Length: 149
Image (cartoon, rainbow, N blue to C red; front, side, top):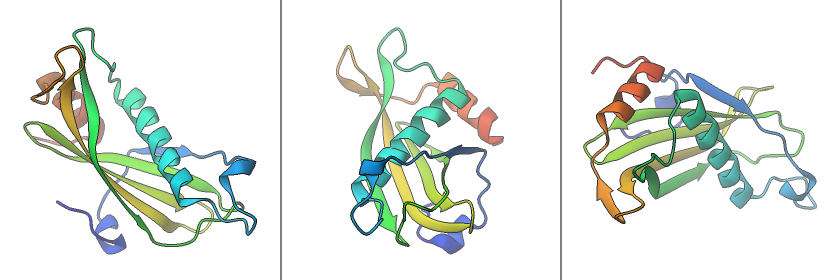
């Protein structure tokens, strides 16, 4: 499944949501949150999601997930006064990759401000090569997302 727009998001259930605390330097003179800063919000969401799933990265042997592709759609302007949350979920796990969807939502209005799609691949930091997605990672993500393989 490739999430393309807001309509496709309506059928998804997000089991992980985290509030974002904005900083003064996140915004420009007009009160807009900089687009690049929104990517850091998504990174924070990823970290908190991984902690919630109980991933321990990097693994002792060096196994890890690394970002290999990120796509972002900026749907609405983001302002300093918006009450922001990042919603995160893994929506597909392949042999060597994991697809994650994230949305930046104004929790006050329910408006989706930004949609982020990330592809991560399994990678061993010590050997510096890609690896298959480990079965224990797959099981942990499926359990958290309540997917039935």
